[in-house]
Length: 347
Image (cartoon, rainbow, N blue to C red):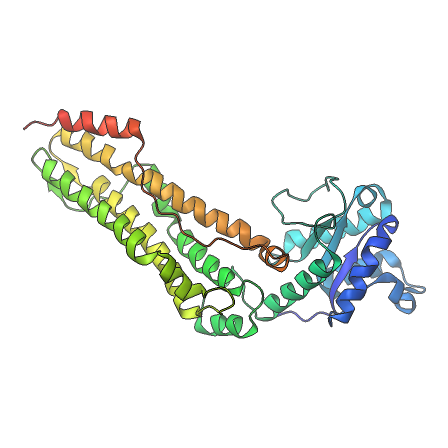
């Protein structure tokens, strides 16, 4: 893990200094080392400030707090700082740039998907404590990009930054789904390698078996795995710490359920059918997995988006819903097409 001389440095326009200073001083009270220009008079005296700022923002600070405002995007010096910061953020995969809005001005080069805090809604205390929690999370050396190992989980559980349970769960789920990305893509290509199964008849018995199999996958997930009781056992009731081993296990079960549904459809696409009518009906049946897979993948993407602003939202007192929706609904049009395909099967 890289070592830095400063934990954070604010990047702001001179016109916005009155908003920045209270946050800087509160961070210092909380034990955060801050590079603040007015406190660095000696270091800056006689220095080439362009080189000094570039060196500081790219090599000496862990995080940069960008105070985004109309003044910030209009002044030349703030523009230079912004471009310096964005260049490092582009090259660095881990979090570095922490934007704070003062107004609704669009900042060039800053993606709208990047999580913001907003001084119109978040107090100085919330912003300062959010920074502290970011630092705690970073010092555990736990990152959603790094493999989940017993050592990394233990470090995260010991440090206990705000939302560590959520961060751990999201990481397990997203890493698992990333590994299944090719299978997920192939499902919607309606492709699977031949599995050696050949259906010589009308396929009706095989279709019925598969309906039961999919129903059981969903039923077990909804009634056994992802219940309120099991989620509370993993994440803990309010005020009760979570269990890291159970969180990892629950995340893996989410991925396993997703993979089971993929394999169910893959078995259909990989089967050879002697009769074209049986093949047609089976291929329509495989589409029953579409909505559930898309819903689960959407849940995972939402979890990832929440994780990007996790510390800020939890510090602000927001309650996060970790419920995993596994509702299985069939598109009526797809159901009608399937019924028509079944009616065409020879009896």
